[in-house]
Image (cartoon, rainbow, N blue to C red; front, side):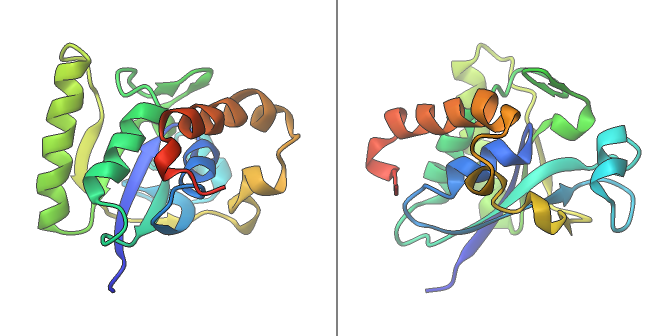
Length: 176
C-alpha cells in the first residue's frame, strides 16, 4: 500500500485537521500553509495576509480504505465552499477554500467532485483548484491542536461543532 496525499484549504486548519483525524482510512493529517509566494512563512505572516498562503491540511490516506472522492465529499460537507476568503468569523485570503493536488489523477477527481459540489450549490462554489505549491509545515503547536486543546474557546465554539457534524453525517467513516 502506497499512501496518497491531497492538500485542502477550508478555513482554519484546526477545523479540517480535527475532522480528518477521525476519518477511517486517513493515515495522517498535517497542518501547514500552501500556495503562497513566501518561503518558509510563519503563522503570524500568514495571518497578516503577507504571504498569499492558505491555511491547509495535508491529508495522507489509504486509497484501498477511502477514495479521494470520499475525502473530497467530506471536505465539501464540513466547510462552506461558497464564501470567498472566509469561513464564519475567520476572514482573509488565508481562510480561502482550495483543493491542491499532487498528481494528474487527483486533479481529475478534484475537478469532477468540484463540479458536482458547484451544481449542488447553484453555481456558487469558489473553491480554487490548483497543484500544491510552496507548502510549508505549520509550527508544532498547531499540530493536533483540537486534540490537545478541546476546551480552548475557539475549539469549543467552532471546531467541536464541525467534528460533531462530521460524526453525525458520516457515521460509517467515523473513527473515534
